[in-house]
Length: 279
Image (cartoon, rainbow, N blue to C red; front, side, top):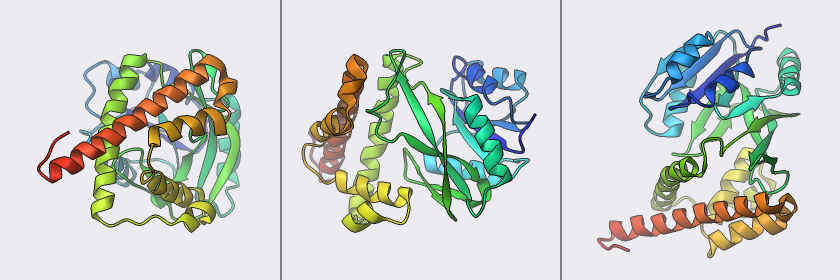
């Protein structure tokens, strides 16, 4: 049985992962593949599965996603967001149907995510094991250049079921290329926030009214701390018990520390360049 939920899948050259993703979304009768001008068979594959394809050149992630919320012809008020390297489990599909039928006052739902590396579910060391994926699209907007923060106009509920995420499905080279781009945008965001005089609040970071607000202020505080790469490793590997994930957990925590180091160095480079210097 089809659920009264539209789906949006963001893509760029996703011919490898897209078939499995769309197979896991077969419960929807309105699937939109929002493609950033792929050069492979992504759009062809999407149409084979009956998806509606819209092409738009990518600029920044928040602008791109906000454009989708405002312009795509969703058939239903409720929208589920997926990336091509994600899979909806049968349990989550059932839970989505139940929440849409009885949402209460909620305008969105957060759900659990299971990340895999080296064929193993990382039970402990992922930074953010939940994500907002189901929402009323008229109540959703995004902020930040990269890793955008969803801002909901109303209460956000919780779904205990999970979707599966395979961030290394295309190999480590792709992961490094992607995070090279991401670290540049994260550094730009940090520099822009500093220029704008953004001041994080420790109080809001600890007891903010919702998860998104807390995460925003925690991130801004974290960006002002010294030795961030080392702190990131210790947070994931020790505080979050990443060592219980074995070798996969150790390597995943190291990769996150490398990513943090890239952000630190690029931030310093941008700030020096603004003053006429260089690294």
